[in-house]
Length: 512
Image 1 (cartoon, rainbow, N blue to C red):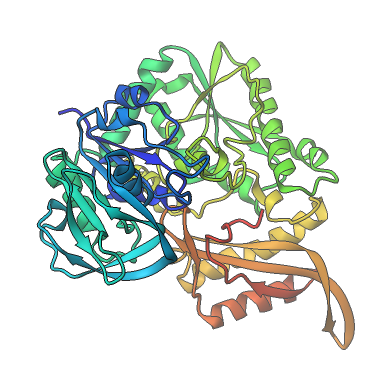
Image 2: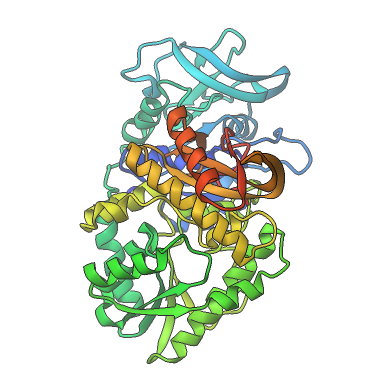
């Protein structure tokens, strides 16, 4: 049976990624594509259904994204969400109006007419609104299927053409029956098959890599994290000894990380593994560099130089493999509709424009939790599967301001204590990511009855599923206190520890 595929058309909502995630969670593959993607290109992707995302613009205003009418001509099921609903109304002959006030927050949705989206759901339903415009009159052929106390048309449908629209956001967890509504669209309206799984993904990737690479050779950027390790294992299954893994000790790793990573990789996997010592090269490139984007790009360029140098020592290397994930792609590029570029990721935005090696990115379409599922399917040990994410640029983006060996050593000591205490307290598996950040300031303190003027370390611990959104972790105060006490007592040069209590958005997980 062909794989079901849902194309999410991005009109700029900051939660568009959640739509793709929710679709995948029920076993259907989904991709996000820009609203500027022509309908014929979308058609070539052979989609089974289309979802139109929300967005910050007002339909019809200057520069606002429009709906390509060719998408509706594909005659496949369509679901419009928020801005997507307004686009459908405007494009098909309905009437829009500006709301007197922007509606943001919870609402009670009444089911005014039978609709496949409501199957199995007892109304009224709690939903989440975020809009400034509204549909005043539905297009011909549409029935109003839902309303709220402030919105006469909160949902509408043309069941005959299988076009559905909702003014609220079913993809966010605040819409308590939102996932059920999406399931009803996928399996009821679109009659899709839930045939997306991590086992099927692994089989497909191995097959595709065999076909694409053939008997040529690949250099794999291996850090020892779950992403790059999964890439290495998948490629090893596909091309065996034609895979050459390179671990770069760039001087930006955590305490004893290089020895630990290379040790367990050599012990557990039969890989061609080369370790490159490049601490001086990276530190020299980062000298007097304080801007985070310049740091990322300098590190990315240095990595590529090394991989290309190492590739020249090997026979006929044509490809560079790395563990780029879908959130890396989304946050690093602006072609996904009007969504903003958040920051350049080492795996994406830090690459030079001209590279001799062709990129191989087997995990480019996966979210982090999906990579963990693949790792489990491949039989990787828990200490790899559940290793906390570690950024490609390493500690360089956790040392705010200029990166020096002395400042890196301070951060290494603090971060080592964070990792130890999280594991010993049982909180390592309970948080998505926990780490220390060295701030570019000093504060006055008192130690041994004397005045100190030393560094500040921030603790960042977050709960997340895929790193697209995150909330600060409510780690018990006694654990935080133990970490703080140990850092101040054991790490020379630190006299203050603070805890970051900001969520993503508006913050990012990493500080740079």
